[in-house]
Image (cartoon, rainbow, N blue to C red):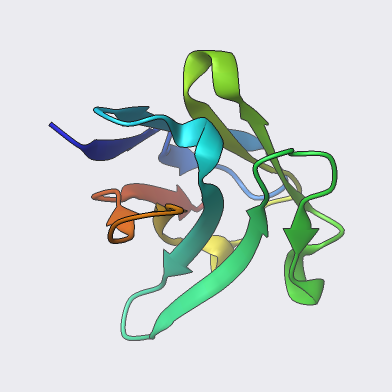
Length: 117
């Protein structure tokens, strides 16, 4: 079965860090451009950044660039989103997407991150 599964979400306090994982099954994640998105309650889906197949230099959007980074471990078929200095405004469902060289994009089901004291 071709799928992506996110994990690592949860409840954290403001200022803390969190690392999310996105693991692929049924296909080789290493040949895909991997992206992370989030969707806050009542808002649209927001692209956070992406990492190419080589994984040398992820492209993170400016509004989170100083706090978030993306990395990948192709041997583990996994991509990570490392988040630091979290604020309540980062509360959202975080999802990953695989843009494959052939075939349709694959989305994960998402993982909830809640930042609250």
